[in-house]
Image (cartoon, rainbow, N blue to C red; front, side, top):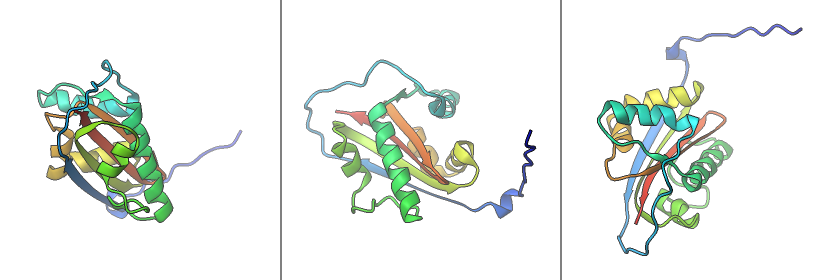
Length: 158
């Protein structure tokens, strides 16, 4: 039996970075509604935060999950935290590319060695990121990580 030893570092030694962006796009209604309410474990923290602030929960979106996962992987490959993809894409481009009929969306990104909990803590303690997570006019989310890189996408269909 192998014994595993954990090494704990003071938070001051753990590098963390974070960024966010809100993307309002032109509105042309071509239909589409979010699926019934769904939640996955990564969204539990997000929806608990929203509930504490008197807001409705967001529904898990497999499409937004793919957007978040793709961007987290892209940032990990580039070893750079950025809202611009390696192909020059913006969050709006990436969402629309997946066929999501975007009305409004926002993206939070972070790099941390503390996992999703660390990313959520960073975003919660940053007013612009907190604002994205507490947007009243979004309905769905996707959250994903790749290595130390994390992406959260919140959005609403037209």
